[in-house]
Image (tube, rainbow over all chains, first blue to last red; front, top):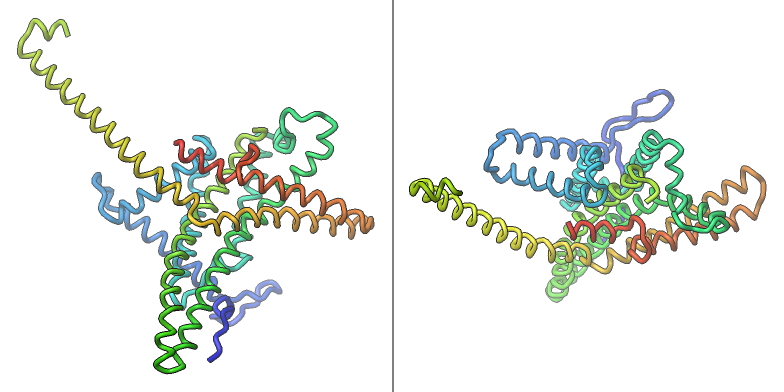
Length: 250
Length: 124
């Protein structure tokens, strides 16, 4: 039996292509899962906060905990001024978190395992930092590239390095999330494939299959942790980058 | 307070209030201690959750620097027709930027690293 560990990342058209201004636009499984994520997050948060109870119920607790968690993250890394960006960061965090967790359900599609999705998210952050930085500070935003207390001759070398370091942010920001998800899901699929292959060898194979089965269980737990951790890292990096836009020259 | 000493009833109310506020304060302190106990190991666990995650983070920083440097160098070569100097200079610069990224996110040098953010997070 042949199992292709890459097959799970394939994108299928669900609705026939529509020609829109010379571009082929199709409704894919990726788009479907993004809609599901947005629907779930909205329903959870709107439904959970609807009772507005002073003593929160279970769902409302979830909503309140996630609010406080993101709010604390922003305050810790971008200060109180960073709370301006709370809706943005919260949306990003919930989207990535739900995308990662829903991806763990068998037969589902992991939106964040597509580089184009994570790159779009990271580029949004990147251009927001640029736009807000220039809008708020004008040309003083360039102080970001000039570290304080460096002798003048060294600046010739330091400034290009800092600029390149700044430009490389969206790359590492997006690749980290994408690669973690991709690698995790391929590993899971490969080990799950071992179970099926070993089980095909008869009774002795069933005992052999127990080993990868235990491994898959452990890996699923690890992937759950990674799913949360990567969403958190994505949010905290967003905050750190936004902090540069709010206070350049630090 | 001086009023309370003159009037017995008032005094009693005051001591009750004082006792209550003292208890509230004790409760608050206890809660704060409990929370500190609860949060610090959890965040430590998140920070050192797996060496795998950390290694991944640092390597992606380095690779991102080099890749962006190479990309810019290639573009410079194409647009300005200065091959191969654009690639040579920008890959070297990109490598340096990558190393800077790694040192930053590992918290070796100052600057917005993840560790930096986590540390701030932990300190409150």
